[in-house]
Length: 479
Ligand code: NDP
Image 1 (cartoon, rainbow, N blue to C red):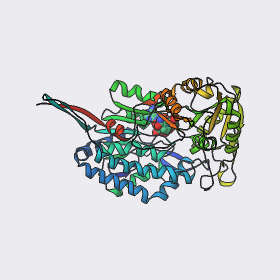
Image 2: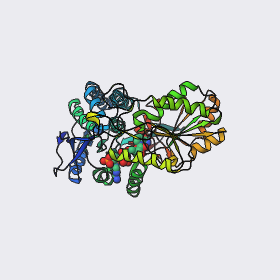
Image 3: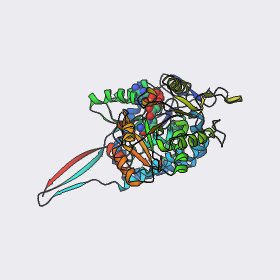
Image 4: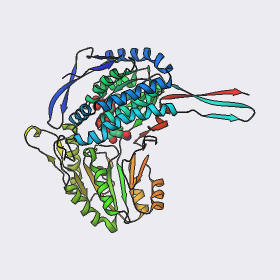
């Protein structure tokens, strides 16, 4: 099967006829091809988007909202296709794609279809002197670039607010997971999205991705991916004075206090560590446990992790499917080897897992728990982005906060305690954009989403996203 680009309302082959293999990581086998797009494809997409912008940006809010709702319904109507495609492309359990990824993609369109209708701008009255109001105009043509871990979920999280605000979009999914973006193209056509409003170009990040970032007619870049890629993007957008929202990596601390609700914490920490094979930027990575309960927690946690089933994504009882690629599997294995050389003890897992039959060449890895490392070692400082967590004891709250913050990253953190006053106090001291107290990945789409330090610049979600995709203009009227 050959995937096509979605350009100016049409499904098109790449102009130079070049394709990239798309691999099913659960079997380690090529199963489709995707366009290796280049600047020729991008020029057609940008020309179409600029043309479409005139009508889309001036369409009524209700008209834009209606189309976005139709896309949301289209996603729901093709739930089974999308679930199967996401699981096959990424290696994640089918059950997870059905429960989380695809419903959330539909929710993203529904949320921003409703948010735009309720979006308001500010007015500042200078009593008896003047009134200021803030006009928020769409930016024009914008670029959205997303990663492979939550493919349609994160792709639509960018596209929906950009479109709702009246922009036209050039979007690029990860070349590792293009299939649901392709199906979204079909859904947009069926929903009656006017041609050119959304364009989806497939290909390599360092080729077509970078072309999008550099294109002078693309006014803003919304990017989610690794911190190194974020640096490259910022080095291009900075001198161009191009707006950029960068959602990058993490090395998220979990702080577990001795008065936590023990069984709940163990159960939730397993979920926070290994959901989606640990390939979620928000997953816990460094788990700090108060020394008085360290041994008890470690033993209970390891016992629960040992019960997780690593198997083929189609098996409904699978907890962890395949990692996204062979390169990523090797990266994860490399970090486990590094942890051993840094003096870590592998309490659970640590190895590639080989399945039988048609899945024998898939990229499976055991959920892995390591102890005995210092927070400053490379294993605890570099993002692994796989099913690997480390356990470390601490004595005082001050020490936990210091260790939690001792990283270049600042995306998310979890705090586990029944002392809510203390939890707020710790939360305010942790340098991370998202703090969960006694829970993990509980999301309200209205909240600001994003990281501090090397985890990114800017926030997505709710009004933050609508503000990013618009240019504020102060209009001052003398009374
Ligand atoms: P990458 O940074 O490698 O890629 C992200 C996207 O950028 C892909 O579409 C990629 O294309 C593209 N890309 C790569 N190089 C360039 C370039 N030079 N110019 C423009 N685009 C480029 O990240 P991964 O896909 O490996 O995703 C994993 C990372 O994403 C992790 O670090 C994770 O923490 C982070 N992430 C952050 C989230 C957040 O909200 N903060 C959420 C989810 C993930 P291609 O795939 O073809 O190379």
